[in-house]
Image (cartoon, rainbow, N blue to C red; front, side, top):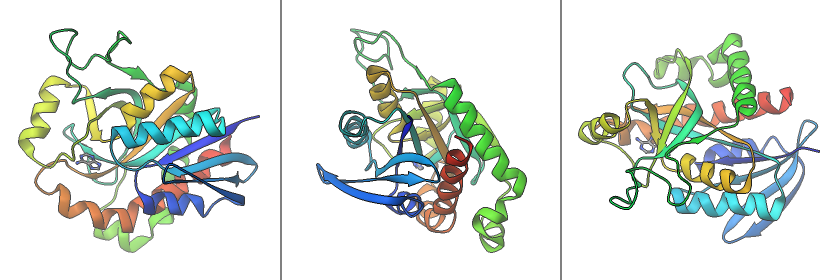
Amino acid sequence: MKNIGILGAMAQEIDEVKALLTEKTIVKIANREFVVGKIGHVRCVVAFSKWGKVAATITATLLIQEFGVTDLFFIGTSGALADGLKVGDIVISKRLVQHDLDARPMITRFELPLLNRIYVNSDPALTELAGKAVSNLLERGVEKMVGAEAVKEFNLAPTLYFGDIASGDQFINSDEKRQEILGLLPEVLCVEMEGAAVAQVCLEFNVPFTVIRTISDTADHNARVDFGKFIVEVANAYSRAIIGEITRLL
Ligand code: ADE
């Protein structure tokens, strides 16, 4: 039987997802709260990953080792790197890469030590399922997810993308840094702080995963200002709706 792990990068966002659970039990380990229960008919364990690669690695490992999750979805926000992506768009991972990993000259830049690869692929079936869930929601209309006021305020007209996501222990908020990452990893669509770490955990434990990221900012000088507001008014509702739809389709 499936036992789905759901990790979220922001406490508020994941609180909205926790609210979907029934038959809840709360387990606390290592300053983390894991909520075990059901969303619809699906057994789930939901947790706030905490921020950054190390924190997310701990949380993902606990989800797998302590709770035996069979599949893992990571949901959160990210900064757009690729031109054309805008606030409110949704990116689902095909591959994850750590943009701040550099063990040269021993190995190639970005290569995962002892794993012989730069990228970790997300699971094709989970990626397709998440894509179907997001497409269903977008077909019904974004105002159904967030309300007409937020649509107007953030000028939301979301597009769904599938592609590469880069993670690092930095909040990217300068055009210089954004261009630097893009110059080195031109296929990357967006940047965040946890996905590639969770991907590495899942690779080593052989657990299928995918990452779903809503664009909250453009990773440039506007990033910090936009971010907080977007979480409260949009990202929470997106997470709740997307996880709700994924579990409905499972
Ligand atoms: N998460 C959301 N926006 C981000 C950014 N600009 N950099 C890193 N992580 C993010």
